[in-house]
Image: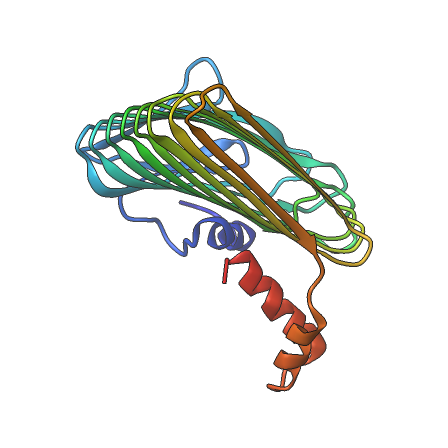
Length: 311
């Protein structure tokens, strides 16, 4: 795989890769597949009608991983990619996605991705997605990212989503829609930080259709400078189910944060909870860390890092 130093940096940021990963992978660079590998249990095939890939995981596949990072280092490149995941029954796999954009010019670069998961009966999936952006000094081109995730959980299926956007994305709209069958479980952990004039919108909708299914959404965000954030979550309890949504935000400088919860129960046995908290960093936290030898800025950075990691 022939990639330059900028692309290597992007891969490290979004997928923790310094070399080609073990197992199945598809690495997309500047609008085309750069490298791909399949295994006996995991197949990856390019779509014929639209840009994107199909990932098919055989039933019973245990403890294997799939890496599908996307990197963009061309200014003005805009793409829309459709990736579909078919996870077979009784499998247990990890999927590492993510997108990194390095904009070297004055035209906007954008990645829009639609990931659709069909998780089979009693299968388990851990899905990790990181977004990162950077640019050359003096350039004005934006880094834009709009990921859409659609999740279909069959009976007894489980999925854990860990999504992070910590730096460099100017505008983003993050949409997640899920439907859960009997006994299915969905757990989502989102971390977002915005700075400057950046804008981030997160929209979550979960239809809890099956008996005894559950969904837990936890979003932790930090808004700095003049940035804006809007978090929306909607839980639809359509059966005996449990739904929990939580949005915790640190607001700084002149930033704006809006949290909009929506709960709808069509069953008397649906249990739905939403929690939201927006506030600033407590002064005593900074003072305590400064007594340990940190500067005020270092103390602030440590608090933010711990908060986004859930510590």
